[in-house]
Length: 608
Image (cartoon, rainbow, N blue to C red; front, side, top):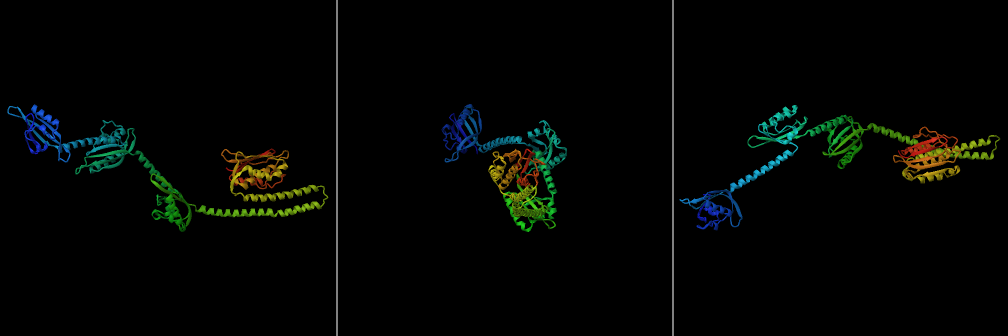
């Protein structure tokens, strides 16, 4: 027999009959007549104690899957085996105990399989609990359907979302919560998928607990047990309302942008991160007479004038590699073969989809040709202006010699000739004054031309007080003659970034005019000070107590050449015109406040 069988006699449980299987179980050393306790083999103390109690009580006992450690060989460790042990008391004809009959059936394979099945059951329950926790904490509605399409399980999220009580009949209420416009489609797609034994993936609107319909994405896959048909479907319902609205908004935005791009009379295009053009607007095809396929991924470069294609392509490749903006003026061929000037611009946009390029080709041929005409006219006017300046400068110098001759002749005539006229002195004085005015006018004309040539002089950091003192040093004779008092206060803004010649001309004209147009009844008192405006820009204020003047606008006065308000004072009437011209050319303006008979205040705004 495959089971171990043996008899143990007497209260000492001495070895009686043992078959081969029992001998192998006990280790092979079982002398007949010897007590079991002397050669217990793998039997445990606990088992030996139970055998004695069975012998004394006379009642059989069965131990299921009892573990025993059996050595396979002397070199290897002991291996756990499991046995079903049956202990049957032996009695004589008078029902007196004789011993025990022991049966030992090796059930190791069955026990290990049972234990493994138990472990798998525990692991299955653990994984099932974990899966349930995951499905019930995920922001999705999970469900299971049987082969008939009836719900076997739905996660609590369904009740939270719909507001339905757990006692509601899910199979009856679910179709009623689908939007009426989607209901028939959803029922048909679900039934078709189950009939074909496949999964499904579709979107529909489901009514939320607040009565609002929200877009949901339903996905499910069948549970297959080959070769049979699917027995159930497992899936999830995910709310995609916000994503769908965002997608719809993006789609509308893209359509609107495409419509806008097609409506602009410019060549609009987009390119990939490597610089290949992916989109042309409608106007591109109309302008070039080529389709999108004919233009290709580098279409705008092929449309350029032949000599410009290689430089433009190199520049485009460099911009694509570095991410720099692309901009250039090129001649591009129109559908009629005419080359027209275009400004081509492209910029890179980087977002979650990676870098892309957006470009435009703007036809500026008319503006370019007009600018060329204007530039030609400007150059001609500038040349004419330079010629006029040269003529005036030369004429003023050439007229000085005749003036000197007239002055010499007049002085000689005064010395040698006599007049018998009561108004002789008056006439001589008038001639002398006329010659003086002519001399002053020629000098003013020469100075004006020289100052205009210096309008474009380079700027530098200048010390206002130092330049003002240089100007006053040149006016020392006039200051002493009129006993003028000049105060300089440049502490508020001591320096100015300006052209030296321009600054000296402005200070010279303002200070000399303040001395020249002094009031006859009082000595000139002149104050020149710097300030800072509310916007942080430097100012210069020159104030005097002279004759004053009439002005049309204090904030924006207009001074013209040879315009004079006090003819009795010697002058050419170009000083204030020149001051205003210099200040305006440097981006500033001149403001004036004045009262006749009291004085004038000039405010120089160096910069706007």
